[in-house]
Structure formats: structure tokens, C-alpha cells
Length: 131
Ligand SMILES: CC(C)(COP(=O)(O)OP(=O)(O)OC[C@H]1O[C@@H](n2cnc3c(N)ncnc32)[C@H](O)[C@@H]1OP(=O)(O)O)[C@@H](O)C(=O)NCCC(=O)NCCS
Figure 1 (spheres, rainbow, N blue to C red):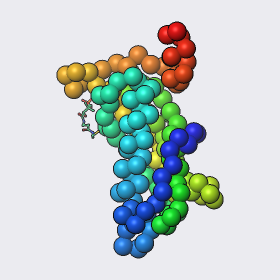
Figure 2: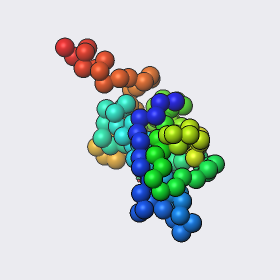
Figure 3: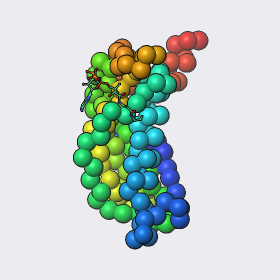
Figure 4: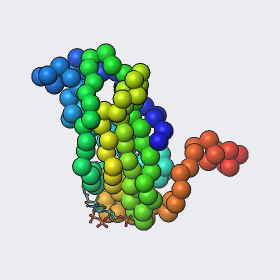
């Protein structure tokens, strides 16, 4: 799994217990999954369809640095199935895992559209092949 994004836990991210609010963490994961999918599928119209059970394993506190990991489980026809883990950057302790996040590629009509992708691509390779 590659950890692309780091976040700093700030006062506005906390719950009443003084630890990272779960909803905030899910928003970070959802944004990361959307960005990853948009880049992989080369389409801005990608939506989150489904998230499997989530497992909060430990918490984070104000001032902690967390990193968000994303991995591809499967390239479907219109879907991209991802997995995510968020961990503490300094201790590597896992905070949450999400086993299946189904992202769906849409056409201009807002309906699922085949994306035609079968493997992970890197922007640098796309740019190199254009030149
Ligand atoms: C996304 C949406 C267009 C999909 O419509 P749909 O009629 O369910 O589409 P389909 O049944 O053709 O499924 C599309 C793909 O999602 C997959 N999928 C749909 N529901 C799924 C589920 N519960 N679990 C796993 N995969 C699922 C299908 O297997 C299919 O994948 P494939 O093309 O790779 O085989 C529609 O449900 C929608 O607009 N949902 C709201 C999305 C949204 O607003 N998200 C929050 C904001 S980003």
C-alpha cells in the first residue's frame, strides 16, 4: 500500500473525547479515494458508491500526523475497488482500515460508464508516452 497523503490532526478535527473524530477521518479517506480514482480513471466524474465495514483500531490526538494509504483491490468495468488504511506517521500504528471502497466512473449522463482501465498507471508514464 502506498501512503500518498499526510494530515495534521487539528483542534477542529476532534470529538468530545479529545481524539480524532471518526467522521472527519472518513471524509479524508473519501477525498483520497476520489482523487486517486479521478487520476487513475482520467475522469472527473467519479463517485463513491459503497464502503465496506470500517474498523477503528486506535485513535489519534491533536498534533498527531496521520498518513492515508490507498491500494487497488480490483479494476471493474465501471468501478474501481479500493482499500484504505490510515496510520500514525510516526508510530506506524494503524488507526483505521476500510477493506472495500467502490468508486464508480460516470458518463456525462450521470450513469455508470466503462472506464477501460485494467492496471495502475502513473502520470509520469502517460506524459512520457505523449512526448
Ligand atoms: C453510482 C451510481 C450511478 C451507480 O448506479 P447503479 O445503478 O448502482 O450502477 P450499477 O448497478 O451499474 O453498478 C455500477 C458498478 O458499481 C458496482 N456496484 C454497485 N453497487 C455495488 C455494491 N453495493 N457493492 C459492490 N459493487 C457495487 C457494480 O458492480 C458495477 O461495477 P462494474 O461496472 O465494475 O461491474 C448510483 O448508485 C448513484 O448515483 N449513487 C450515488 C453516488 C453518490 O452520490 N455518491 C456520494 C457522493 S460522491
